[in-house]
Image (cartoon, rainbow, N blue to C red; front, side, top):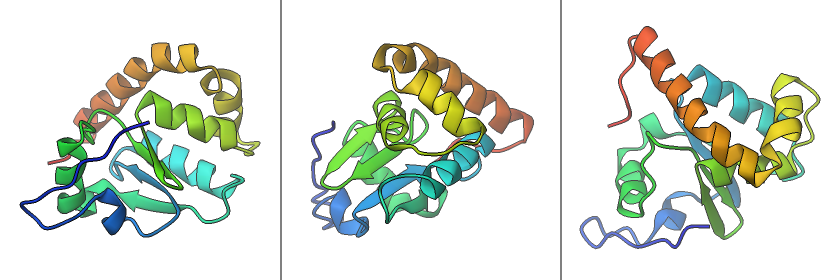
Length: 142
């Protein structure tokens, strides 16, 4: 979990004041893997309400995330109630809550429910995202 700091420069008290939804996934909408993964997780989770937030559309949120040591180019963020999970920890939590029977659901159950496996695989996932963005001529998140 991540301890969240506020941003006195913008007057935003916290990330929570921007994300009203009880549960949300904050991800890179230009990353095809991130987009597919989040859609599958949102379709078959036990969460009920789950908002998908494309970080490319929210520069203020990106600033707050970076202030809180969560660089959007280094990982997705999962808001689960009052807790924030980042990167491998976010993928792990989503895998625990996942009920999908599709490709990502099976991958998630097989690999991502094990914290040690997620920590080993997450750097490869980030590298895959970077290569895909490069090949698709997309920039990193500002």
